[in-house]
Image (cartoon, rainbow, N blue to C red):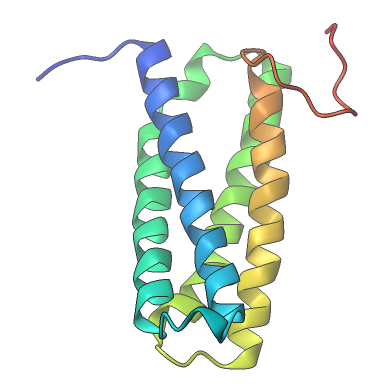
Length: 139
């Protein structure tokens, strides 16, 4: 079995997580916009694929916490809780072809939680050149 380094594992975790969030967002947007004539099967399949990538991102992120300081590990815990809560809120809208409006509302709340969790994930490591306006350059 090939052993990956921490940087490679972090990169895989980030790519899987970003792909998951993008697919789940595409599912939510495509299910609201019925004018494209895509039907209901394609957004549902896209969302289910996003859920699978989210679970893989969670599994690939396991063990990365041992490389963190105390403050960063607290931020990583908040990141993990928000991302898992957002992913769990997606399940009800991914389970049925015609989800209940309450399930759709829960999935939108889940997307918001995942967005906040993604921002917390960006704060764990200082590895990006693109910053939000509220993020400071110096640590």
